[in-house]
Image (cartoon, rainbow, N blue to C red; front, side, top):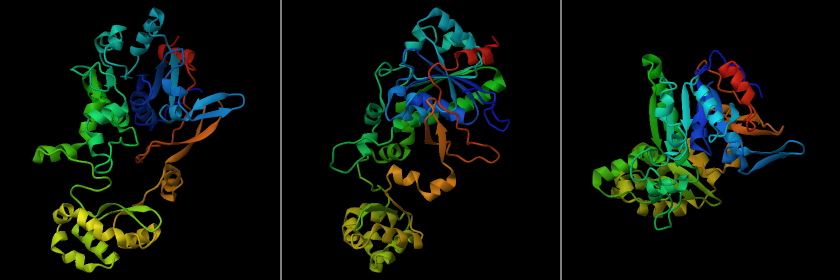
Length: 393
């Protein structure tokens, strides 16, 4: 593909990003910037590139080979340059590109890039204004810095698995790789804050973004609970430690969720199940009472909810403005009329000629077109183009 000229309205038009990223966290960060108009160049090794290129499902065509849908989801709107980071000539070319970039994002294991002469201090000498963002499992320094990390291991060590799943059941990870993607969100947020500062001062910065720190950051309610009572939170399934009824219930046909997060909503639930007397029951008078006695409360409500279908209960609760939801799988939510109304699912062409769909940038911004969905790049497809565009050669 040829790189489209960013729209004048794109918030990150004319911002240049080098991504030395692989698998998830680094590529996701860069994809957020690319969606908002940044010119993102993905640096990949010539022998296979980003390992996610081989991840199934593979979308195949008769004459164009196979292309990874997983890779496409976090690498749209980018260009690819294949460089051998053990080659002096390729290192020299990369440093020329660094001299023209605003942001560099990398998620190599700590120590790897500095050994190649590509650490922050090395590249700061080339471009002192550049923002250099390192994403890793445990940060660039400290006892765990050199420890290998994948999403599941960081979910485990960060405490996420201790509060995920049913009470008394074996620990499970969150089904979405939140370690990778929360780090990517924190990285993108911090990169843009420091980019503003660099524009004001002419000085860049090194950002040390860890998956561990990011998961602790989004665990604010759980960490604050521990700080408050010195008792580590436990697994509660779909229930809530401070609200009830606030969980999944089984209907006659399938499960559904309600969230009666205050007294008014609780009274509506009582009316919905035909048990107004529960509203004045001393065990359930306040939110704190209901949370304390939620096991008893669930035992009372569960048989009632089994008497009607989930659709019936959802209609009942919606009519009373009680927050509720079906428990969708991804096939159901991606075809949902509200998701269609939001325009979240967009068509995406792949380099092998196949067509697919992807969830686009999910935030609406007044005056900004966030519908840009250029194909993810074939490996090394833009070496000559980037040299011409960035270096004028």
